[in-house]
Structure formats: structure tokens, C-alpha cells
Image (cartoon, rainbow, N blue to C red):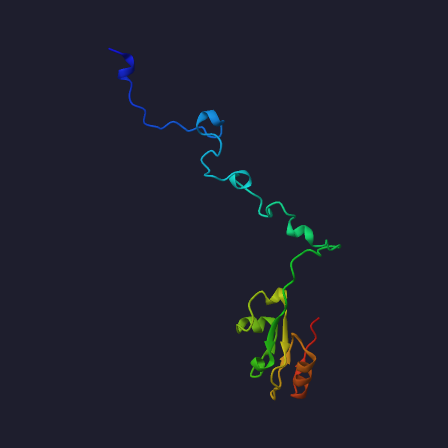
Length: 147
């Protein structure tokens, strides 16, 4: 009896070695279809634009500290008519508590702008436009300093 006949059958398939020359039968494009060159690679850099210069390089460098940082966020705008019926001092915490601005307004800032004149006196402790300051003082209210 032959010894080879008694061996158990192989369960795992053999690994196909690809990209080892044309004589191997798995060379040339190595199972990547008809693509070649750049698109046959596994990874390409995100900034690669097909050989032309990167778009980032076309912009001038802005000299100085933190000049190339993203645009800083603007302060949240609150219309004065939403504050017309308040009895408390209007602060950033007050505006957050009453869901007039989101909680990151503590870092970004808040500004009150005039949309309608008010008749009731209120106390403002946030930054406001000159027209709001005039409308609040004409109604008998106060503007607290922000320091």
C-alpha cells in the first residue's frame, strides 16, 4: 500500500502568490482588473490630484501666529424682543437657561441686536449694539459693564 494514499485530504486552499512575474500566471495586473499605475495601488494620498499641483500649494502662506487656522466662530445673536418680558438680569447664563442660545455661548459670546423697540425696563449684562443700549436706557433699564 502506498503511503500517499493514506494522507488526509488538504482542507485549506493554497495561498495564491500574486505579482511575482508574468511566468507565475498571477503577474501583470495581479487580479486588479485592467487598471494599472496609480489606481492599481492600495492607497493614495487624499491630496493627490492626478499629477497636477495640490490645491493647497496654490494659496499663499499667511505669515504670523495662527493665521492659517479656521475661521473663528461668531457670537450668537439674540433679538431684543425676546428679552422684553424678563424680570431678571439678562446674562449669558440666563440666556442658556431659557434656551435662547446653546451652551457654548459662554466661550463664543452673545450679542443683543435691536429688532423692535421695548417699553419695559430690563437690565442687560451682555454685549449689545448701540441701538439696543439706547432703547434700553430710554425704557428705563440699565446696561451693566462686562468687566
